Amino acid sequence: MIAKAIKSQHDMTLSFEHVFSCEIEPFKQAYIERNFSPPVLFRDVTELGRKKAHTAYGSLVEVPGNVDVGVSKDLNRDQPNVCSSSSPEHHASITRI
Image (cartoon, rainbow, N blue to C red):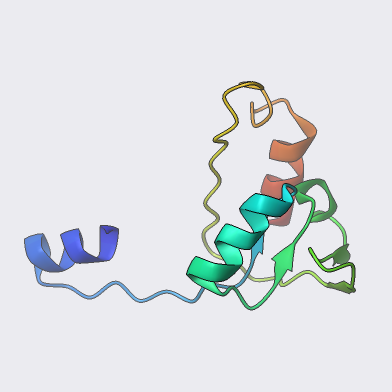
């Protein structure tokens, strides 16, 4: 969506590499896997500050480094503070970036 807008408005091509995704809810993991096929699907964003983290499938793998941009969105309306700037989830994701 963003790439199309940049192309139509500025005639520039936005290139990116999807390095990994992260989701703790199994049904959301399935959605991400089906629609985006990330190279790695991590389970818990709080583990991303470590050198290795668990995937959605239980493997312990190295967390990719040298990531320029991270995108985070909390869609859980029942817990509006889950990704607040003081939450462990936010801290873990920012620490890694």
